[in-house]
Image 1 (cartoon, rainbow, N blue to C red):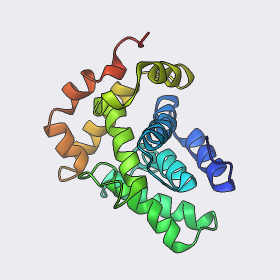
Image 2: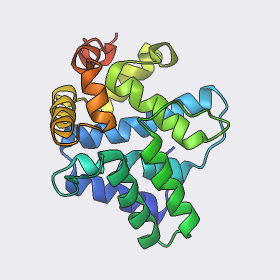
Image 3: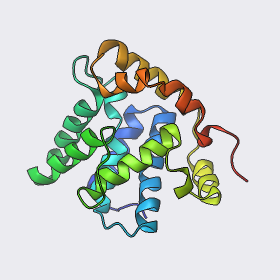
Image 4: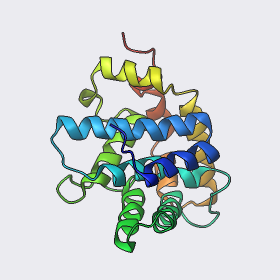
Length: 196
């Protein structure tokens, strides 16, 4: 189910090196949630492109790659572009990874317009605030959370977004904080007891 390509392996190496265990598991789960949703809805997508984008989508929240002036999703998109070109991707393919990551916390993108961005939006909104809960059966939730536990992800993520909001008050992260992200994270069913 995970693409076996040099770029996919390199993306996993990058996030293992620079992300905390909780953030690493979030990025991996984001790929699997999106793939699960895509299969259920028969959405055709580029597996390698989606995998790399899902793994790298929060890299700019890490200390090593945090930008003090650019919103994290834009900085992360630029990192994905650099990663893609270094991996030997054509410029257009690297630009797609940049676009997917930049869009992942913006207004909804339809599956027909951009399947990879749509999958990442669905996956991350489920991961963070529990949106689309009906799309993810309890047995699938339990299995994925056992393989890739949350490890205090909600608190770590909220602290990152609060920090982003303080430093970048015009960013999408700041809008999320003003829209009571803390309450929505707490209400996420993934933060409760594991489903049986």
